[in-house]
Amino acid sequence: MAEPVTTGAEAHGSGAFPPFQAETFASQLFWLAVTFALLYWFLAKVALPRIGGTIAQRHDKIQGDLHEAIAAKKEAEAAGLAYEAALSDAKSRSQAIAAETHQRLQAETDAKRRELDAALAEKLAAAEKVISETKSAALTHVEGIATDAADAILQRVLGAKPSQEQVSAAVKTALKG
Image 1: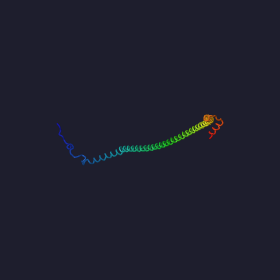
Image 2 (image 1 turned 30 degrees about the horizontal axis):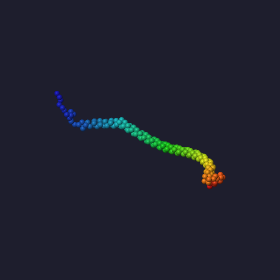
Image 3 (image 1 turned 60 degrees about the vertical axis):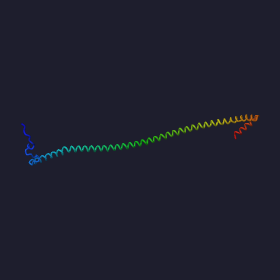
Image 4 (image 1 turned 120 degrees about the horizontal axis):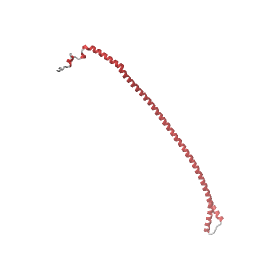
């Protein structure tokens, strides 16, 4: 058949908690010291150097990254300054080119204007000469036409034909004055 159920206190006999038994204090303290010594040795020789190495690696990596960032910042600033200098140089060169082109075009325009002025002055002089010649020719014919017209008018008005010399002299006097 089945055996009766017993409690934990009956199984251990005395019923006191083993760590509090005074007979085992010496061995407990010995093994406590040995355990702490082994734990200290393990931490000092194995765990902490690994953790320290990892921390040192992280610190070195962070410092390296910071140095790289500072170098990149300096490089970016230098590139920015170079860009600004190049932009300023390009602006000044473009302004110089624009001014040079403006001066060249102005000079070309002035030269063409002078050529056209000279050509127009030449044409104007030629036209004035033609007008003067035409006027002179017309005035020489005017005297003859005026003499003929005056002769015809006097003949009609007076009913008699005046002398050609008298009419010519009268027309010349009228044209001069």
